[in-house]
Length: 76
Image 1 (cartoon, helix red, strand yellow):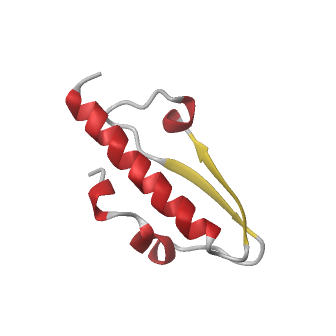
Image 2 (cartoon, rainbow, N blue to C red):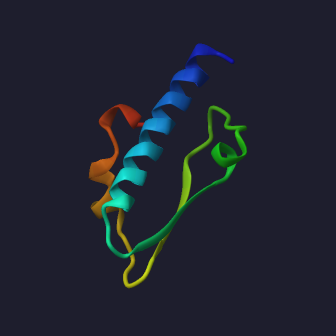
């Protein structure tokens, strides 16, 4: 694995951890699922992080959770 891909995976893991921590603090979140190439353990350089968030009562906007992703997790 290239150093560049390894760094990208580390940043993706930080993003996943941040979103997971935020979801755990929300009373109406019923589930959080990682899907796609990161879930299968086969991400590529162009892979994004695909997450499904299930809530009981609302639609969570990126404005709510994006502040809980560490800035070092920026994958762009």
